[in-house]
Image 1 (tube, rainbow, N blue to C red):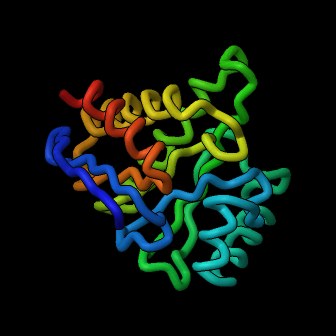
Image 2: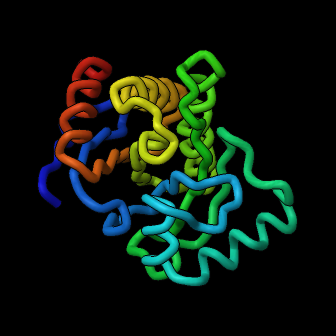
Image 3: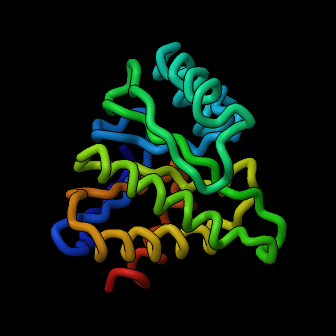
Length: 188
């Protein structure tokens, strides 16, 4: 890990920023910025499926067969094993594709974060790590996405006190700096 920052607190929960690889996180859950098919893909999604092994894909197939036969809707979240990852579980959520900001993208992105947190709390998990959802192939501007991510996490942590740590794992130094700025705006 190149750099980390854990200076933010909401209730009993710490909110941390880490520059690094989310597949290396040793948390109760990591969040996968999945596509609706849940079958893996590029970016974070592909890395999690490759690193976690076939157990994750097998559980995703079962979820598709039983719960979401037409694909996981944007903003919803489901949980699978972490497979060979250090994290015990993977929470898969689908963020919105950026279409200029007037097609419900902010609300859908907030829903993706909120539903992931809600699922973690419902499963009595204590620590969760997020990537920057929707800012890769889906094109959501990082500055806008980071503000929504922090506002949503802050709102959730103020409502529920089950989580102990929420970590944002940013792959690039550029995204890490943008998230650090947004965190200071939201938490200080």
